[in-house]
Length: 322
Image (cartoon, rainbow, N blue to C red; front, side, top):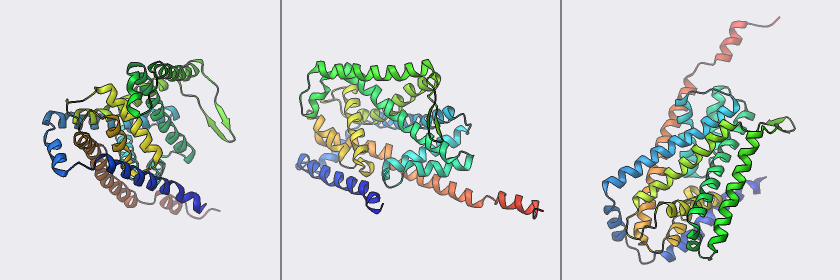
């Protein structure tokens, strides 16, 4: 058990070191002055649009939890959902799920609203599946619309194969929607019963997941200069790949991994410009939300501690049982 506990942190550390080494090879000629010039070249309008994309992304992330609660048939106020979702993702994105799991934050928050551990487990899994569904959906569209994107990753894949993969992924999503439309029976695993999402829930998943990813990719896109910019769909495709690889690497915040994939996939752009755009992404999507989330978490814990022990008061009022 002790060995298993340290596996993912070690994997994350290795990913950071290896990516950092490769990134150093790519950026050896880059100076701080170059990076400062790239920051200065970002127009105020693009700073504003990147910030707007950040707000849209975190609003959509709250939608993940909202859809999961609708699936469970539980009602929680929008404000609480938004604060819980924001805190969960801001912490897990920055620190890393292997260190501070989003499940821990959600359990602490939603258990205070009466959800059982089983329901919270389903909620966490449902949110993860909604994210994965959004990644698959958008990846399929990128492969169909921009099949040449695979050439940017080193190995040349025929455009027909890329497009075919895109259509295959779309077919898988269609089967998922079809299962909901046909009303598949619940899956029972021991005492656990998993309900197939209803069609309105699936429709919401196919909207909110892509919206969050489209907005997050927009942060990087608007921070990049026009010179050498391959267009939004290419940036979106690179973002989907880099963000997925960063999550799989278990590197906190995807440090090094995100930058490496972007710089390798955008050879026609100045590395300083790409790095500056990614730093804007990290500031807006990771660092600033992380700092706000710490404050929200502290306020929540303080409010929980200040609440009277209702159970103890009820027992005292009932007195000893005969």
